[in-house]
Image (cartoon, rainbow, N blue to C red; front, side, top):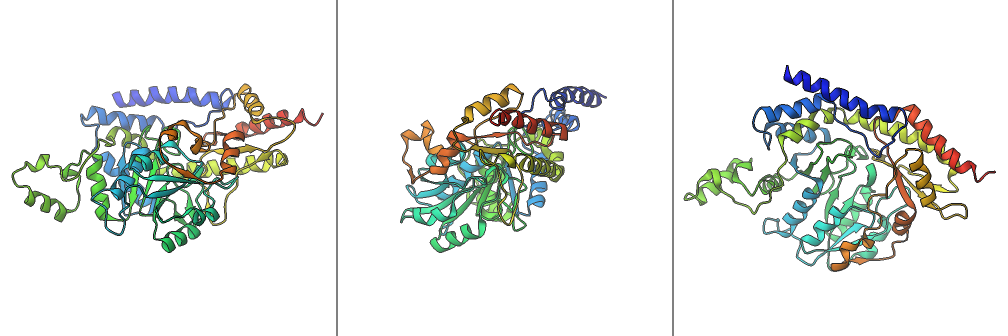
Length: 424
């Protein structure tokens, strides 16, 4: 009975938020993905008395494994934590010899990215090397990668940006040629594919985020994906304080127990650990969303195609998003870069959109090489012309699954009103 009351209450509250979107009173960057049933499921973990990591986490991990066709999905408390663990394990004593990255090595990564893609590179005593991106698709410029490879280069920390897969054939070829470790930050692009293969399944490891504004949300949460069972067990242990009980492989478990008979096996810690544990509370919230991911992506795709079709008449002023060849685009947002022109600045368009209730924000973190946190650390970069343009002239608007035809027509009409003043 109590659960039914919870469902009823949250259904009413979530409906109030949706009504604002329906009436064009607020067109936010993202919309709530979970419904009243998800909230009730999450609340039940509290009532059962064990809302921390447990059976719901395992359920969600199995769903992600199946959805993305990967052997191991290890849930953690954020995509940023996943990025840290991936780079830590490759620089640690636990890395296989062929994968080991020496401290001080260089890691190639795109300049248009997020702080917790770059931060873990530095935090693990590695040096980021920033590469420019392509306009419209915002993926790393593959043609610039080899030009920036040195004797110290050991890995590529790839980012699939805003639901777009990078050019994987070329990148894998470069990695093989130069014996580079490939790591994928897939935090923004769950569901995206390259030649029908899911992003996040090409490299040795990849990360996924389930942050509040992403395709599916556990509010805070993420995954490490890997096809390597050896590493997967270490990730499971490391996320939970280095605990033995998180290890799945029975032989590995038995080995540690036999080697440490004087220690209570319930409190045996074979690996260095962190508290990056997810919760059943979060897993229960997102579980059914995973089942609806395809529906969410299809809605986003239809909205993106509509906006591109209707706004292409402003191509002289705007760089609109595009989908690269061989890609299935898991649209995250709708990025726009204002071309340099004599009529208006990006800020003027952003201010106008804000006045008509259309939210905007920068494209990811812009050119990350210009962010102040990097000033205290070593990094390398070439010319980042496109990345600077993205930072200075770019923004995106929301492209969530709750946009209706009425919303989309309203957005187009807003752009029409803004541009009409130049045609008078």
